[in-house]
Amino acid sequence: MEHELRAAIQQGELAIHYQPIVDLRTGRIRKFEALVRWFHPARGEVSPVEFIPLAERSGLIITLGNWITRTAACAAATWPEDVLLAVNLSPVQITAPGAELGVLAALREARLPARRLELEVSESLLLDQGDAAAQFMGVLAAEGVRFTLADVGTGDASLDYIRRYPFSAIKVDRSLVSGPVMGHSHAAIIRAVADFGEALGIATVAVGLETAEQVDMVRRAGCTLGQGWHFSRAVPQEQVLHLLADKQAALRRAL
Image (cartoon, rainbow, N blue to C red; front, side, top):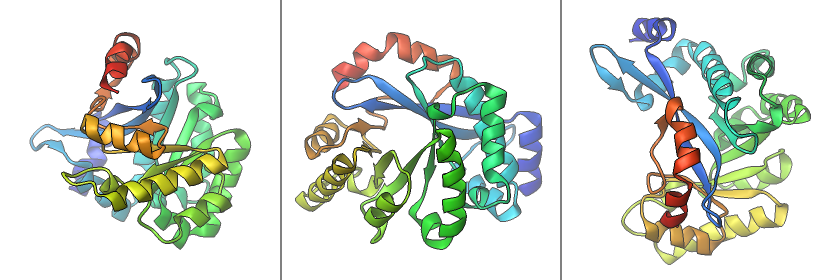
């Protein structure tokens, strides 16, 4: 499997799809998150849940991560200037020596302004590799790169991390939004996270939105951005401009 993944990177079996993140007040697309896909010639589509951990264990995540950032940045350079690119980085990738230089090189190659890139990091990275993360984030933040903290609402230290690091957005943990039952406790946690974000002047993103009821709940709780199948699945690059040009009215209706 490791050998096949290495070959897939070299032979073009991997592709980047882009899922919109939508302003819950206006319906406008504010950014797209880059999501890697592996289309194996024999196995069919291989889930990232299967091959990303493999890439991390084998060290291939450095090569894969640099390819994702570079490819997505080149794509984002063709989008309207007010649309951001979000990329989810592996903790292994972030803590590699010179990781920040790889990101800056990708931006230069793509001619994408640093302010249009938003990197997503996990709480586990800050917990386990706080010094390395601070170095990585400090260098890139000074260049204008933005950061999002993922999975907020389930960890004990999330709110403290938001104060200590240069985050411009926080993502509400999917478990608080998705599923058939969203109780008062979930709504209360989301509202607390959204209030904290508003007080600090940063966006709150609700992910995993699949129904109009979920969208209404998170919007009333104070979330400013939303992401999920209710708005759109992740689409190939050739459909991004179509989505931006022709789907805005439909996205507004979805609110």
